[in-house]
Length: 123
Image 1 (tube, rainbow, N blue to C red):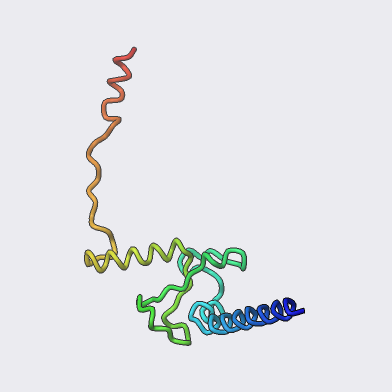
Image 2: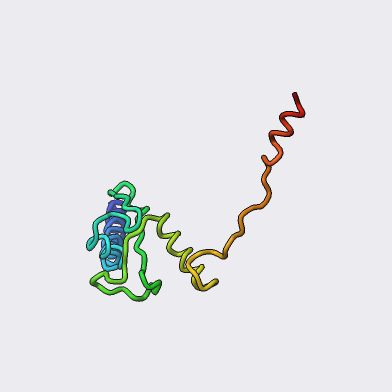
């Protein structure tokens, strides 16, 4: 009988902790944003449902994670790929003063330049 009471007590404790965690999480900016906005990436317009919702992120437009206005004015929902791209653009701005990576020169080597001549040699 004592084990049964102990099991119930342990269950009640775990249940109370879970309810507290759920209430705390509901107040977080991710949960607020998911209630405010449709579950669509703001860039690529990919739609999400409960099965793949973990791939939808909340992006802080001004890149300040402490700026969480309850009206959602600093948030946008982005898929994980668009979110990564957005942060890459921001890093490039900080590093190079531009949203584009440093200019890459076109490759000058053409591996097929002498292909016709080489094919003719083999004949």
